[in-house]
Length: 380
Image (cartoon, rainbow, N blue to C red; front, side, top):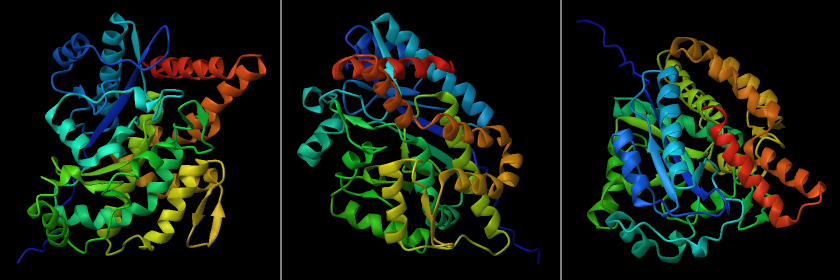
């Protein structure tokens, strides 16, 4: 009898991003005109759509075989949205929170799914003036999907720290690098995922809520990492959306390579050590609060380790996988995020520069918004 070999995943990539639309004159949030949505839909063939709030727009790449295809498709998506928005005097920004907008002044999209969310989640969902980036990695075997999910949770705080882009909320500096998560975590079925022992256990668990009519399917499960409800992928959902295209691609490449590294360990009958969710949650909080500035806990060493050291170790750990997947350059470019500062750091620097130049608090926040518009267009 021939030996049975583990199924090799294809590790395809898919990237979903949510943008906010701002008025080019006032820099305030603006609802997407139907003509804008129609033009984007005609141009992007089902890869763009509305989000919960009228001032949001969501895009998603096709299934990409590698990071080069993802770059081409994501650049096309961003460019198209920016081009059509400009016709209406608008511009997209890829930041997880608008620097000064008031959520109470926003309106949700009149669509059956979003009307149901507003009814079910009441006041909690009204505050959802936030945007994220989701990265799908193709893993056709559902058992592998669950096994890798349980291990990949360890690295979620690292990805969050590098992606942080939401320091401001309603005109205030929150002191956090990712205020987005404080809003999102108020929803049910969010946060770090549980650790089902198998695909069957995962299905039994979620089926309880489906059978009770509390959710219609697993798309209403919003963990930081989950088996996708629609695709044979593992979907990372923890990251803030990145203002710069190249930073988004580096984060997608890191996610893809970490996933492959964990699969590669399994082919040698090895696995990443599973730490208690309580400990991973502490690193999640550190990433949410400090971004990359204060480091994360290395539980093996029992030390708080600076982010540059952790990133160097991670890049070395996944170097073989990056080579196989053809994304060595994009993985190495994650160091550029540290060198130039995360978006949260850059936004605060723009604000402080404006204040030192004699501008008011309001004018400084407007400078931050203009900076985010410029960054969105920088790599297009």
